[in-house]
Image 1 (tube, rainbow, N blue to C red):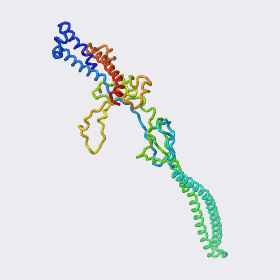
Image 2 (image 1 turned 135 degrees about the vertical axis):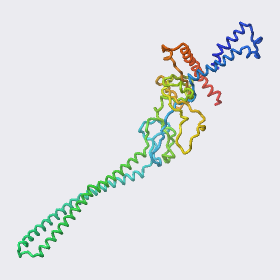
Image 3 (image 1 turned 45 degrees about the horizontal axis):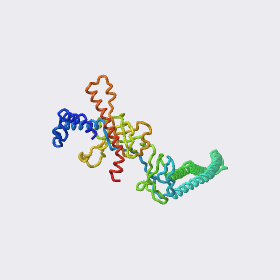
Length: 410
């Protein structure tokens, strides 16, 4: 309607003025409701053509969309294992800091396992002390076997020497007995040394391995105990948190609630523009938004990023080939908007439904020295018609409360 009124000022109105004051025709006489089209056909036709052209230029070079939302990230409150809630530390809608405890699961079985692991460590420590004493006994046995072997070997060498010299003081039977005694004492020494090696290996290898295993089991159990207390990962506000002592929490089927971070996505608004505007919308363009949660207020924005793909074309590999006609609905061009002035959207809650306009700015092109007159005039016209779209956005901001509170019937 606004575009039609603007176009009628240079088409229908001059036509009617010409026929009224130049030709002397009067409304209700020569110009009636029946002869309106014939008398004003040139003005009406030209106005319709200009209106369509003006609307096309405005909506193409200064695109608008109602698909505007300030998205925010939520974090699911989950425990790493299932269990029964033993204690709840926070309430729903409460602000928490990163690291604050949210709730704790029952830890009786984990505490019992930790106590068992500690007892096992104490047993291994006691076994190390006992085995250390056994090592002293084994060393004494080795020394005793070495002394006995040395004594038997010395006696064997002495009597064997006398026998070789032909002395009759020593019988051959006695030499054989001493030789066997030396072999026996050597075997006893080897057995004592083997026993000492076993005791040493037990102290140096077996018992430390058992202690390390018990300590690892204790560390694992203590880690599981820490996991039973669920902490806030980021600063945020707890939502949908109706947990009570005795409830069952399962990390797959039954989360405890959600956590809304306070800073993630706070300064960005996402808008989905029509695909026809892909060649117009660029980073750095100025924009404006008005939101249902903050009506009657226009917030100046700037385009910071334009997604290089259309989300409607996304697919995931499956065992079924995609038919293009199943994706009949065209996707939108995803654009990120940020406030032109710091703190401009602090009063707009995240998730708000908004309306956005983006405005083409040809100021740099108009200042180019080699620009032609026709191009200069057309670019001036493109920038000028942006005022009409800005006026439309302000009319929409004025009508939003009426539309939502009165015309919707709520």
